[in-house]
Image (cartoon, rainbow, N blue to C red; front, side, top):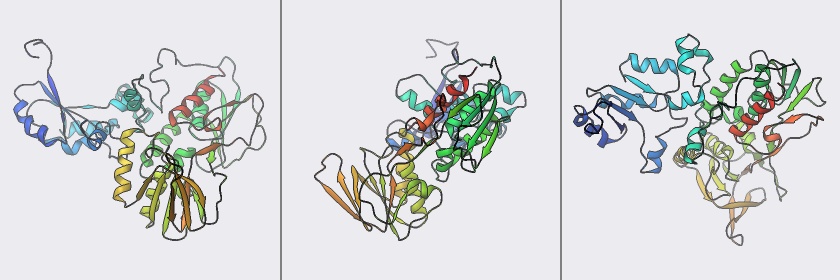
Length: 417
């Protein structure tokens, strides 16, 4: 490389949690203009998770691995550096000479300018959901769940309303918050109704578990700023069409309960996330295997002292989750002593005995003894309120990912310009 392009700055990227990389770094010191370090490697499931580590991996996770690579050349460090103040501290403390903040800049490309101008509080914070890396792994354009403008910069220009309207948004989950924020940014008077006493919907609910605690906190902090000027009405259940020029319905979903023989001792993963705990000691969690609700409930129950068996009705648990998130869930569940049973579909709960069939070989039955059954079998739309001419977004239409819900809500909020 030196011979081919001697005018270029030449550096080497190393895996900072690799013993081999640590050993080779001093040998590279006199050969390169800089070293660049990150966590992880692609050769194993566990190693790959470190490449773009999601929460609950701690912020600035690279910091504790940097010292062995301080061998002379300038050092660039990256891995879970999401906060500009934390980035400044890493440089001031000589942990590194420069830092990489890839996901933080995908979320808010204006992060450096806002921080430089003294407006760090206006930075749209990365929530660590890994939607961006999921797009990359799917070989489709990079996007951001939190910021729908990312990847749409040419088309997603600011809009201003030609006529100021009163816009009512019903539902304070991700789709509703996004709709209210966009409508307000367009210049409308916006009222956001949420039947619960906190915003966030299923994200706020999932924030009770380790896998989503930081995501929920960061998302809600972002919307505290984005919803400035919106009339937010918590604890208001809307039963009649609101008095408004335009209405957006983002009423979300409820847990799906199948039409099966089901007896006492039954609850849902959402009940567990809200703080409810079943009677007895042994609990079976019947999980359809797509989202994280059953995994979160299992983790919380195990932490509360229950003996937990997770029966997953898919090829692998958490199939809609990005691989790096799923890998971390697997590590935590196994370390918590949770039994994981694969490829099982619930057929009956007999109050002490859960019956399942194999999804691939339905003639095969599995029976589990338990004191309680927790259902995590997906969700269905809540459509109790109908308003003629209203726009709809999020889970009210059908189960959505966080990215899809925020995008749909944002598009709805922009539509009245």
